[in-house]
Length: 261
Image (cartoon, rainbow, N blue to C red):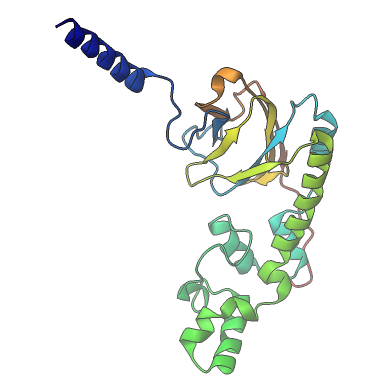
C-alpha cells in the first residue's frame, strides 16, 4: 500500500514537471531567445504593420554602435521615385510600382489592364509588343514581358539598393565585430530572430524605409538576459518605444528627367 502511494506521488511529480516546467516551446532552444519584432510605423494607424521590409540584428547597444548609427542617419540613399525618374520611367510605370509599394517589376503580376487600356504602362506595352514578335504569341509575350524591359527598369533599382546595403552591412559588422542577422516582416509587420544569445543588440532597418510621404530609419536597443533564453521576447518597433531611435525625413523632391512622360 505504501509502495502504491509513493509511486503515485512520484508519478504526480513527473506530470507536474512535464506540464509546468520551463521547457522551450516550438522554435525555441534553451541556448537562445526567440525575438519577435512587430513594426508599427504609423502613430495614427496603430494597427497597421510595416510589411515586406527587412530588419537587422546588430551585436552591441546603440551607444556601442554610435559611429555606425551616426553614419546611417547622415546618409541619403537612393529613393524609388527619384531612381526611376532619372532612368526615364513614365509616370504610369512609377504609379504601378507605388500601388503595391513595389521596388521592382518582380513585386507582383502584370495584369492585362496595365498592358492595354486606360491604365496601360508604356514600358509594358513596348515590352509586350516586342515579345509577340519574338515569341509569336500573346501568352508567352506576357509571361516573358519583364525580359524585354530595359535593364534599369527591370532590376536597376534593386541592384543599386543591394550595393548600398552591402556597404552598410560591411560597416556594421566591422563596428560590432560580429555577423549581422536579418529577417523580413510578414504582411502584419511581424518577424522573428531565432536563437539569439544573451547580450545587448540593436534592431535596425540599416537603410531608411520609404513610407507614403517620408523615409524612416529605425534603430532600437534590446537586451537579452539569461532569463530570456528559451523564451519568446516581443519587441515593438514604434515611436512610442523609448528604446528606439527613429529618424523620419520627408521624401526628397526629384528633378524631372528628360524621359518623364
